[in-house]
Length: 373
Image (cartoon, rainbow, N blue to C red; front, side, top):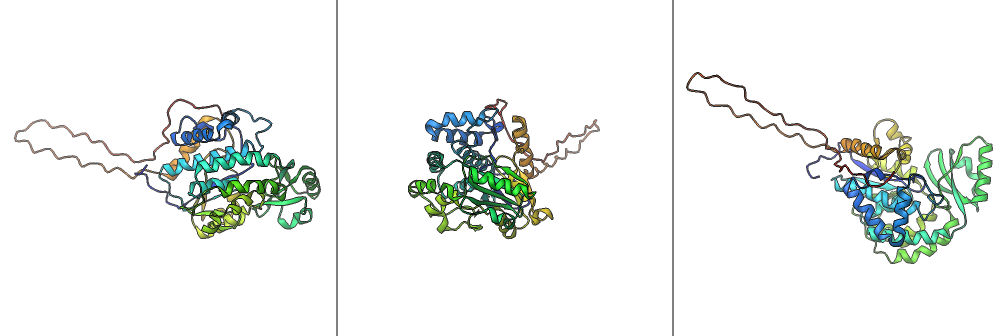
């Protein structure tokens, strides 16, 4: 929408990764918001034989036992993140930067033009098979500092992500990870299983990473056209990393340094509005712990509810976010022509005027619903 003004604050888009998935994430927009629906349908088409299965998993009212598996969660997170990002970009939003967590970084890179969406889907299809054969494992969220968990880290339990100063993710095969949870819980540290069936961001998936390298080497990778911050380098994604297949393939087994990267973003993009443009509110919650946000220098906006709360909740959340992000410039009221002075004394009538109105443009959606949340 070319006549929409940009937000008063510079906008940084954030995209969530594994653990943020939930049934019917953003599904209230499906069939009701054109750009989002078009890109989701394109994703299901490109997934070929898996497309109908993934669409059913996404729109089902309750998760199947496989919903958190790499074969479902990862492709759906990539598709939903990308479709939501496209929706905002098509509305004319010009973000100063983007960053993502895990597979969210791949969505950000796709939106920035590092790779084509069809290639991203092809990589996701390969990932579904490559990672399905990794040893059974999982991920554990721990409310602690790195120092407090250092003694349980080692060959079997790995630091998967640093999400906040006292919020970590650990990863490993199931038995050692459960043992680490018992030890840390015995110290009074809060631990919670993450919705994942694979030990992402740990050496446990190194075999799958190696298997994915030929796929990555066949992809045409180009420098980003929009600024992307990488949670693996903790800085701006440069041309060298963007065009390096090993950099991208290796992300699945590397530690995600989301908190330090977000600190860098808030330092280099001061007074910005962080918009979580993916499912849920997990990154918004983490962002609010940053000093730049806590002190009010920067702000946070989630595009969607924290979880599935019905189709209308999705629509209302996006409309509210759009009102904050965009507004039409005021329409000037045309001057009312002055009537000529009558030559005879005749009754006169006030000339009615219609004031121009200015306000936000709501999200245009047709009445039909497209899918089940």
